[in-house]
Amino acid sequence: MESPDQLSARELSDLLRSNQTTSVDLTRHFLERIETLNGDLHAVISTHPEALQQASLLDEERAAGHLRGPLHGIPVLVKDNIDVTSVPCTAGSIALKNHVPQEDAFLVQRLKAAGCIILGKTNLTEFANFMTIDMPNGYSSLGGQTVNFRLKGQDTGGSSSGSGVAVAAGLAPMAIGTETSGSIIHPANHSGVVGLKPTVGSISRRGVIPISFSQDTAGPMTRTVEDAAMLYQVLAAHDPADPQSRAVGAFRLPEIQPGMRIGVFRESFKLLTEEENGFLEQALQKLTEAGIALVDVEYRHPELSHQWRWEVLTHEFKEGLNKYLSTVTEGPRSMTELIDFYDEHAEEGLRYGQVLLLAANSTTGTLSNPAYNRSRKLDLLYSRDLGIDDLLREHQLEALIYPKWYGYDVPAKAGYPSLTVPVGFREDGMGVNLTFTSTAWTEPLLLSLGLLLEK
Image (cartoon, rainbow, N blue to C red; front, side, top):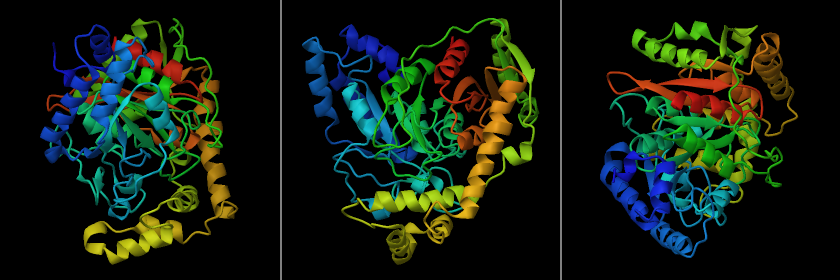
C-alpha cells in the first residue's frame, strides 16, 4: 500500500471502505509525520489531544455499518483562527495562547458531523495578516515562521500558509484555510495544492476570528479538486447565526458543454517565466480541446478594480474583532486590550509591529462612517458591476481565468468564488497553478472546470 501521506482523501476513503486500513492507523500516521517534519516546517501550531480517540470511535461506527458520509474517518487540519474545542484558538498570537473556545465553530461542527477527524490547528500569518504591514507570510509570534515544503526559502503565500504547507507536505490529506483577500488562493499556489475560496456566505463564519464580514470565508485546501468538492459539500450550509449565510441548495457538478466561453486575462501571463507559461498554455489547450472557447479579456477600469481601499477592512476589523474578543475567557477582551498586551510584550510579540491594529482601533468602530461606506460601494462597483459581472455579461462568458494568483483581489472584494488548480511543477519543485473565478454561487462550475484539468 502506498504511504497515506501520498494519497488523496478519496483514495484514503477507498482504503478504509475496503478494510485495508483504519482511521486509527491513518491518524497515528499523520500525527507521527507532523512530529517528524513540523519542527522544520512550523506548519502546525497544535495537535488535537482527542484525535486518536475520535478515530477509534469512527472505526467502531464503520464496523457497525454506520457511515456519516464519504469523509468518514478522514483526518483534517484546521487553520488556527477557527474555534475547535479542547485546543486553543490563537490566530497565531501569544496573546491568545490560553484561549480555549467553549464551542466548535459551525464549520467544525459540520466536519465532525461528516465524520472528519480534527487532527490539529495550522499556523498562519498572525491575525490572518491584518496585524501589521511588513509581517512575512506564514509568520506568527506563537507558531514561528512557516517554511515552504516545495522549495526552502520560497514564500509560503498568504495567511493560510500553514494549511497549504501541511497539505503539500502530507501532514494531512486536507486542511481548512480562510481568506479575506488572497489567503487561500495565494498559499495554495505557493504550495502547489488545490484551493477553493467560496462565495461569501456559503460557509458560516461563526466561530472564526474575523477581519471583514463582507469578505471573510473559510474554504478547502486539498491535494485534488475531487477532494475539494467533497469537503466543500460538507462545509457549505446555512447557519442562522451568520447574517450572510444562505443555503447553497442541491450540489451537482455540471457537465462542461462544448461552446462554453471563458475569459482569459492574457496581460497577466506576461508576468510569468517561459517555463510557467508553458504549463499554463498546456492547461488552456486542454480546455480548448474540450470545446471551450477562450476569449481575451481585461477589466473596463483595471486600476480601479484592483485598487486597495483600506477603510473597508479597518472598520470591519475593529467591529468584528471586538465582538469575538468579548467572548474570550483568558486573554485580551477588546482590540484596545490586545494592543496594550503587545506593547507590554513587545520583544516577544511585536517583531514586525502592529500598524494595522492601531489603524483599525483608531476608526469609529461603527459602519455608519462615510469613508467606510463610500469605499465599500466603490469596491462593489468595480469588482462586480464594472468588474467580473461586466466581463461575463459583455462577452457572454461562464467564467474567467487568471494565471497563478494574479487577480485574487477582485473576486475577494466581490465576495465571489475562486478555484486554483496545480497544472505543473517547475524544475525547482514549485507548483504552477491556474485559477478560475466567476459570479456568486458558481462553485459547482468552477470545480467541474478544475476536474477537467485534473483528469
